[in-house]
Amino acid sequence: MNHRQQVLGGYRRALRRLDDENLPWMPEAPNLNQQQVQQHDEEQVPRASRSKDCFIPPRFYCVETLCAPCGVVVAWDKFPKAESPTNIMDFLQRVYPEQGRRPAYICIDKACLVLKTVANSDTYRAWLDTSRFIVDAYHYSNHRATDEVCRKWCNPAPLDGSAPNLVITERNARGQLYYKRAFNTQACEQLNAWLGGFEPILKRMTAGNFNWFLHTMLFYHTMQVIRKQNQRRRDEDEDDQDDEVI
Ligand SMILES: [Zn+2]
Image (cartoon, rainbow, N blue to C red; front, side, top):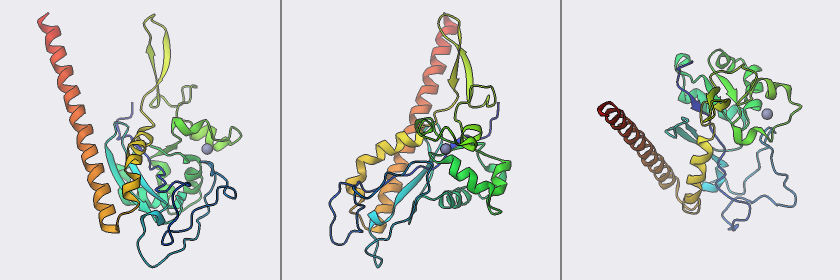
């Protein structure tokens, strides 16, 4: 078992929905009739924005979050343009500049695109020595079955025994063996569902307030996750003590 820190990778968080109001000072919203929905394993072409002279939260295409499978937020950042594989790798390099501290698995909705960029780049290739890029379970079913690289290297739960750190076997009540994911690969997805509730507030904030509010929310969220983990650990310890008394 590899005990190196397991971290789920960044994840796109659009700050503006397509059906939002479009005020004059806001960047132009994409036209639903002309805009194709981007697949997670397709490259994103950055769109030009209408205003370039002041901070407008919706101009930031997305907020990227990095969190552990348990839900603890490790880092976040704003991407000024599209969520490209290069932007994702630059973010990861800022968070993990030291090779020895990099996570063994990085889970991203477009991991196959990121992997191809890493393999073809002198700047990022060293990541292949420390980390594997896998697609989270939620998005994997939408990736192309014909993409050999994706199927071979980015499968979050291969059942051929090639990734014993990702898939474990357990026994059910009848004693039969079954496969189970070792980690929650959707922690970022769940975090973003929670963050989505603050979207109407965030998109009208100034740059300073936006950064402060988001950072504070993620900080308190992480404190809450850690508090629950500690509580669960205490409950388990008490159960163990009760068992010993019996
Ligand atoms: Zn893929």
